[in-house]
Length: 201
Figure 1 (cartoon, rainbow, N blue to C red):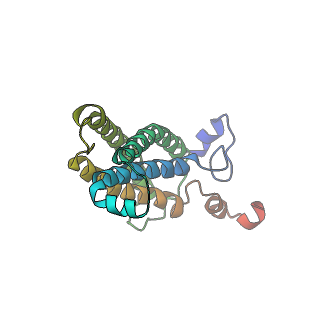
Figure 2: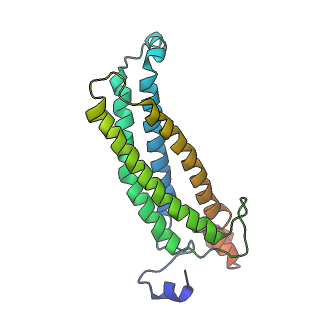
Figure 3: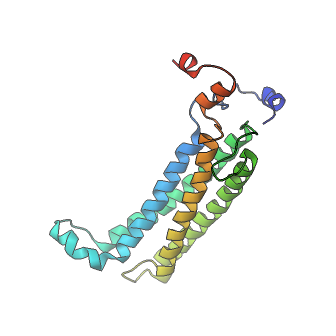
């Protein structure tokens, strides 16, 4: 963001370019990822339960099939709620970004292109996660409520594909922090010609 515009803000930006010490977006991203991955993996485990049952019985683990599906559903529901905050925090922090213009990511993209792809991708992924949650809810409460296998194979396949897209999208975000130093305290101080070892003690 333009330095003159930043000066007009009512809050003071720290060495990381944010009004708070630790960026919120990366932390919420990991919560989103974890909840989504756990949700899909537990639905897969519930679907493959007949194959796992002898192993679980051998390990003396008293598990019922519906328990896997419960974990899958509630994790996906929590993921959807958290992702709204993840995207909102990401857009707030990207508005305050002041990346270098002479650096390229390992994928050959500049900071502007990476931020644009990451921002638009974040909105599309939010929409996809909401759609997956609606789809999952319809399976749980309408279409397959009396079935022993609560999810469709197509749902699991889309979930696995979405995990791959989340990986690619997360790599773009890692480039923003790692290669462009966006909201990276030490990176920002080094760009300003200051010594982080002295200032961050």
